[in-house]
Image (cartoon, rainbow, N blue to C red; front, side, top):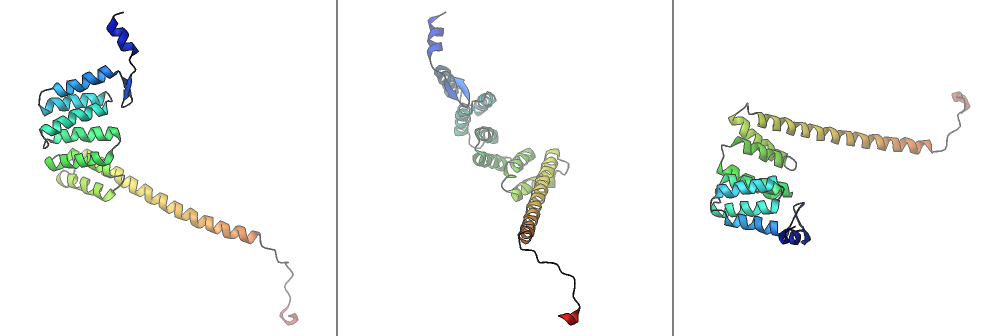
Length: 197
């Protein structure tokens, strides 16, 4: 066993993005990102590799450096979108996706991804994105699938709303009947002729 291996095994691992990395590996990866040539394409490739490994914070460094070199590159904004989605920052991811769409307005697949991102909070915006794709290409499979899923979610939510309001009415009615069940009963007597009253 070499001294290098012995020392490395004694250093506590640092947990980054759910993956345990020794501090020396983390330092080497950061140094690798810093020493890559000033070419956004290479930095993007490195960012995607780091994302595939689950190392979002290091990928963010790679994409960030690529963004500093060329902030009008839609591929870099897509990489940042993917990074922020993996980190759980949907709003920032959506901002970068909208920038990528503005830089490549003809990229229909970007609009489909944007519709998927915003469908949970702003369905009309999602409809607009999918409508923009389908107006240019009515046979776009991704947009049609996204539209179907969006319509299904709207219908499902409406059905759930109507069920909850119907159950609320049924619950209120049941409550009234329960109250009447606890009221004192009137004695039933045979009907009396009207002249005896």
